[in-house]
Length: 108
Image (cartoon, rainbow, N blue to C red; front, side):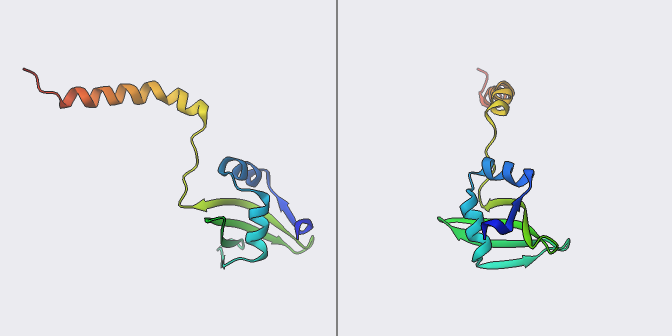
């Protein structure tokens, strides 16, 4: 089955970001619990793998007889915020948090 699958760059980035292994994608494609046809012709494959609800969007390429993996995610899990973004946002969140606590104190 692995020779029948091609990953887009987007899909590879998402797998890395979301800590989804290629094996989890292969398992989901090979033996899905459910599939849904998308309006654009893609297919969504859904399977619980390692207690995670894995969802894979793929498009069949009939001329190559392969599945093109477009994206994947785990239902119910948010994407982690990259460290660089957390560092950049920290001062703003800190200031916003301070202004909220100042408004809750009573002046005496």
